[in-house]
Image 1 (cartoon, rainbow, N blue to C red):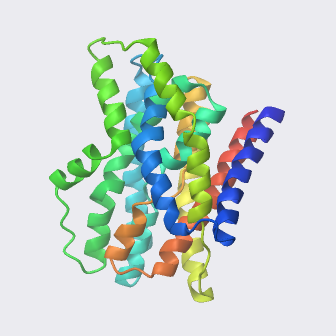
Image 2 (cartoon, helix red, strand yellow):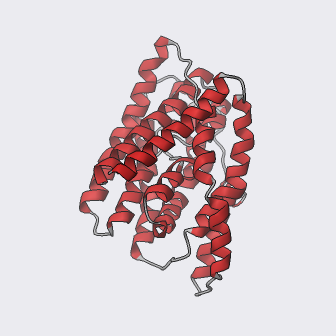
Length: 303
């Protein structure tokens, strides 16, 4: 328990430090883009690859893939149905912010810090099912709802996925391991060394990104959107934890994935649909705080 609380405090301090650096103008919110480029192109792929050191094919990996795809499909449907009587741009917010979790920037640091690295392939497979929605499927539906053409091709979704270094990292690792190709331990040691900086950079960047400026009339919609999202995800997480036959670390990893925050891609897609910028920023920030609290609460309960 004490080790979990210590790491939880460390994560909180990393986020607080990032926010403090922004408020004191030592760094600006725009500087988070530089950190994100380092995370996405270097530390996150390295951390993911390091987790494949003990990789082996297991039925739980297929389940994680199907869970990521089917659960986000259900969330997309729920967001569409819950907003059916809403104005177009507000409906787009529901559709973009109900499905899709930020697994790489948020969930991965928690998993690597609190759970054994052997669960990383399960996290990757969940994210593989989750990614198509964040890469364009949710935007296609949201764009149609807000009055756009809603045209997103399979080619554009695949292009987005295969231009993502983290996705490429675990895709290549799985392709190598399927025929039994094993990379040397020295390679994994090097990746582990690079990946160790991922948790700090990710949490620090979240502190830089965090913002809260929301008119009172929009608070209700933010609460309703995130309330729907987290109610469904918590129900699914409870079912996974208590009913699935997989090893405990696998179940814990999938639970953490389910309560991850809104994907960062919801921000540019929301702007493209003409959604209010203040609500887009508030949904992202409140989602980060909510997911942080829920993730730590789970980890403390499991300790």
